[in-house]
Image (cartoon, rainbow, N blue to C red):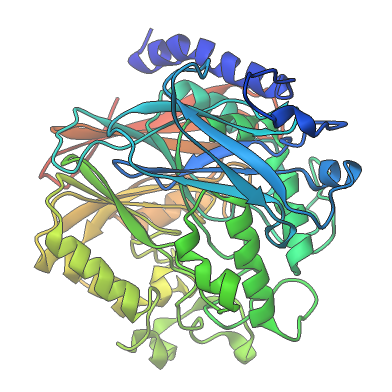
Length: 534
């Protein structure tokens, strides 16, 4: 039995307990000295699950949303509904660490965000929500180690791209067995499409998502999945968006290219950003202007320290970017380009992150004392030539469409002497593993870091394996690519090395699919060279 198999076997009991907790999430409470039992419910108001996120060394955000159908059935439409949250040291809630009451309001879709601070560092907690006679499932979360601490390990999973109609979320059923400290989700949590192509494996209800109400409905559909709910309840998440949370291939303030035209794209984007807030364990301060002042912008980029072992950076490559370059007929969205016939492609002013985020990130690099610097962002960082016949052709939708912005990011790593940069991405629906070159114009330039770009939870690959193999030949800084399987990655950081395991479900269209290890890689500390295991 391998180390991975042993870990999975020992964690299976924990997974079953979490799933059983979701199945029995409505309970009558008879706790002395409380008035929680006044409001009765015809069905479970916590059917969308619970989640925690934005962890720090002394705080966490706890999330839930009352089911709007239950609120309506209880005759509470248009009213604020009090929800009690509890954080405890034990699963029986006999030792409460913190608790409070939040008024869930219809203006925010009856969502609840409890931002808890003053907690013990490097500590595991249990949490739940109470409303009237109902109790949510019990979630488990944790705080990060104190900034000066030297933890022995950090174990995280990374995932992205879970189009509902393309398959089932069985990958999360297996992720529960990974004994994780946290999950890093890198975009396309939901899709605005009304259905999948060539056909839905399971029905996508509600038509196109393009208004606040239809975005809410689409999130509720995704949140109804029991495997996704169980994984949210098992560990804290750091969550970023990409394009499908708004519209396919949108770029900053420019609309994308899916669905019927909407006259006011920025109104659509504001609605989408608000719906994202309503359904994610994120901090209100980052969305306050959007919610209270109807501002156009919200903030999801930031950093989190896991003691001295690692700093985690979460970037936003969608909200602040310039439009994609050299689209045929000036269409919106994305396309492929020949750099020799696209002068604007190499314009030094073009940005993917925006100047504010770029400057913030460089300052973060300058002040970092972490052994590993883990940069979570939405797509593939490394240059990837799509032409395997001797020419040069790039996608204009990711970093390849913004080469000077990519070079500024790499130069910031070099100039600040950033220790052990590890870039993690999504979006591609394919696994890509490679080295970050100091200068992609010079194929023999040194490696300054490593990159693991993950496959999707369900969304279909854009190319087949034969094409990927040809692309590996002309892009030798990548050492591995797989387009066949859906799944997630797990990275374990220790003071001496990292180990990345690519986990692949056998068949994402089968909700009970088995899983296997696709490949494993190690990187020694201070040696940015990837070694494939086995």
